[in-house]
Image (cartoon, rainbow, N blue to C red; front, side):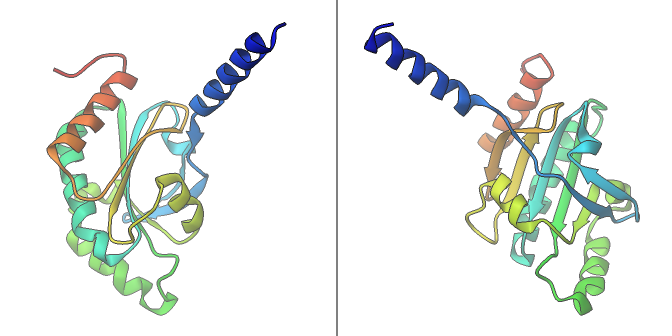
Length: 176
């Protein structure tokens, strides 16, 4: 094999290794209705949209994303959606008050899909490509639980369109 062929093969292998999907780290959370959910295991077999905030300052952005995602996919049983707040850094003595505040802001019909997470913040931040504490982070997982799309910050028409297109692509059809 020539040096040129060897280099081409090495470049191809490097490119293929970069295409390997990144699995969402395993973690558990409790829904606002009190159920334990283990992700990504609970999402396997479905395209899943996961929207997470790491600070109180991200609340408006996560709510805006969740509203848009809910409008787009609430009636599609092939899409799982979880909204989440990570409270690992919140002092234990105020966590109950925080959860009470979240419950008053989230419609009861969303309780089974809103997770409160108390651990694995570091791993979740890494999976979300965390950069700004007050941003919302949105991830799309394929049916195997691999992160295949990310966004952060305020919801935009372009961001929602990109998310919708990616979800539809994973389902095997394009949106109109």
